[in-house]
Length: 336
Image 1 (cartoon, rainbow, N blue to C red):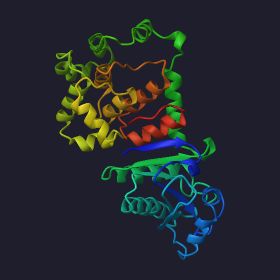
Image 2: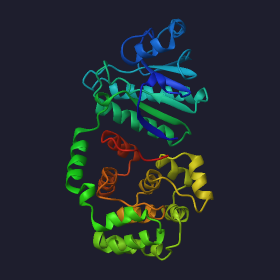
Image 3: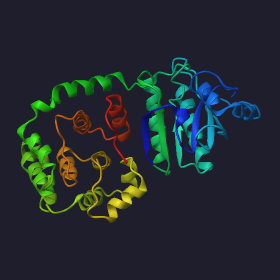
Image 4: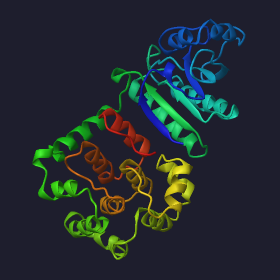
């Protein structure tokens, strides 16, 4: 855990294994394949010659040589032929077989490119969806940190409709800092030094923003002294979910969750606090209440906050989809 989308040169990722989007011969090519071979040196090509190639959807593993990792996992993605020739199934297999090899070799950190989205022509938004869904499914049952490495903005694309919907929502709800409401300016100036004040404020606003949800907060608001950890655990108990299910859905690793659980005074980052709200599928008022106990609030002057409000308002709680959108709008990601 977790899945992290980064913009970087994959040949410079200091991880246990780097995944190479290879050709069937495994003898080097263009794009990521060529870059990795050049960075690793001729020894990588020499070992690849002994492997006898690789079929589409499968994966093979070699040493990394001059790369800053232990292994290179070579997988052959599908060439896009319109989408009706099994391309999606083959692409899913690339990620699954690569992750299985990484687990077999006890890798704790793995870096993937966006397989098949370059010269193989797989539509970038669809390739991204397959990558995130398949890696996310794997991480629900395995402890590993997986990086999805995007080289530049042109290589990354979310659904056009989703991007347009979020952009429209931002246009309607985002305000520049100088147009902030008096309440928002006072909250930032105070730094939310008093957790109780922030929670009380949420309580006063709740009836105006969502009258139907106000009753659901009564029990929580009766305990204004409860910290983030205590409140989070109450939400988890109410959900009936196991701890592991929650922290994995929050894109948070086990060690960080243990710190939160065992330290009543632990203050997580804002992105971590919101990630738990997403994992628990809290509504906006519950989210505001939970993060207020860690000293945070949602503001119309923050694009990050507005995007979060969009997804919660739409009842879309897939944290990986949310992170895709946050990345597309150059915002920090949810989770650890």
